[in-house]
Length: 425
Image 1 (cartoon, rainbow, N blue to C red):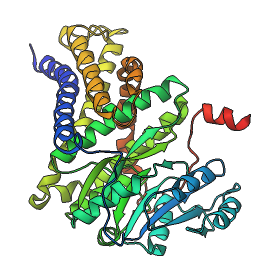
Image 2 (image 1 turned 135 degrees about the vertical axis):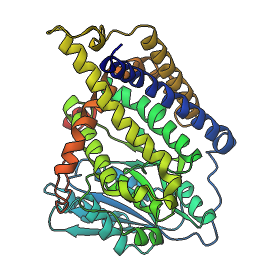
Image 3 (image 1 turned 90 degrees about the horizontal axis):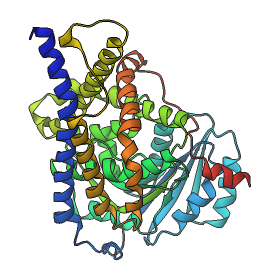
Image 4 (image 1 turned 90 degrees about the vertical axis):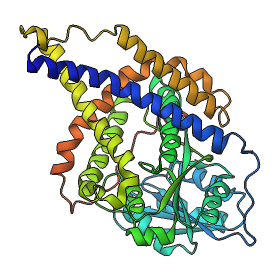
């Protein structure tokens, strides 16, 4: 076999073995986390607070959230935590959000509203809210999210018992499940995102907090320089900068937050492309810093991201060779004979389904009927892996070409089909 054939063979082996290895790693790490930190916790009994409980400021940055903001604020006002304030930051909304927020201040005495004249972006809205907050601890949620009534208890508990805890990421759960994409994302947030965060906590660092539900220690935010206004994924950026300042980030699965996600292909594509571009922006910005020995605890997360990006490019080359072989005669060593799963594909599919089963068994504590979504997850590798692969390949040059002084502003996302129908009727 010539050198080119060896390269192609290694490419095929990497495309197969990498997801297999990572799936096993996530299952082992997630299972270890569950048995040592989660299994014996009574989620119906929130942890005891100090007396008096520290003041918590709940920040709600919002842009054009007229359809959702009343419900979001109502759920926040129902928090069982005894000492909190709510700060809604209206970031240049062009719908009825501003008027609704002013009306809500009459109904909810804990609510304060800050109006920004122009669309300055989520990062700037969060900065404004943090500077106006009276609490030392900040809970940040999106303007269309519903925060579980005990979530603040679980988040603040980590700050009180960990002086080096800079942030705590919560457990997002999908509300809209009317299409196949919605059902797949229910399983994704459990079997992929939730399991990864558990595993990453075991080897020391978390890639990112969940932008839709996260809590911060204000001192850690100040030291890290708050959220960057030029990164399209402010949650990834602040997570990396906090941990580079040696602040700890924890995962709290009991801090539930019900969120809306895209249920159309176009909306999903835009969301995943933004995530990929933001991840690449952060990677390019901090790659040199992360190589220092003092940041060695972050190397696991950094390498995981780097290798996953290389895998996306490897899979792209494999598919390109297969398609090219359909129209031209390639040397035998270059040929990818079929994309139909053979024994290795069946093994990979089995391991993926096993991962879904393990994660759903863990997350059944939070959603009793979660196992019903396992059937739909057989379609996950076909659709979502392909989207992830393409967006990752596209994100590299897009992140490099994006101007550093260009502010990341709001765009109205796709929030599902079923909720749109309900509001129209």
